[in-house]
Amino acid sequence: MTQCLFCRIIKKEIPGRIVYEDETALAFEDINPQTPVHILVVPKKHIDSLSHLTKTDKDLIGSLFLIVNSLAKARNLAQSGFRTVINTGPGGGQTVYHLHVHLMGGRQMTWPPG
Ligand code: 5GP
Ligand code: ZN
Image 1 (cartoon, rainbow, N blue to C red):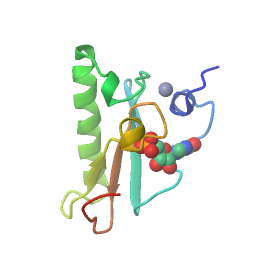
Image 2: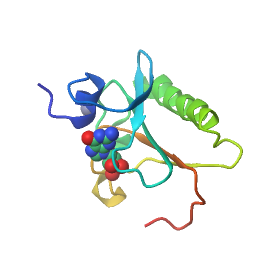
Image 3: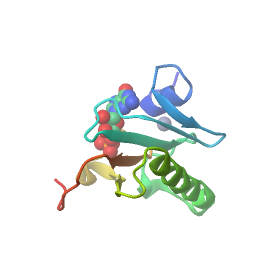
């Protein structure tokens, strides 16, 4: 059994509030939302982080952002705006080492982030 939390959600070994799924990606609600809309978009293929991307992942990474685009529209965030975040490595605040894009919105975001 895999130890990766998000691989386990992808394999439905543990529950996730899934909002989108296709052959290569899954999107689900963050368990500890920081914004009214807080969705994680992940590739089904395990990739540790953005630092571990290779050229073979070029289409995959593009697909993740197209999913973000359509989810933002579906949640009525496209007009107001939203934030996408990819935390990478310890210094970037990454806590789950399976590449994921945070889609966050539904309130005014501020800058700089913490
Ligand atoms: P990171 O800090 O790695 O960028 O983001 C990891 C995210 O995963 C956090 O926002 C955290 O709330 C979320 N998370 C951690 N464990 C679970 C879980 O079991 N289920 C879901 N849906 N989200 C999780
Ligand atoms: Zn994984």
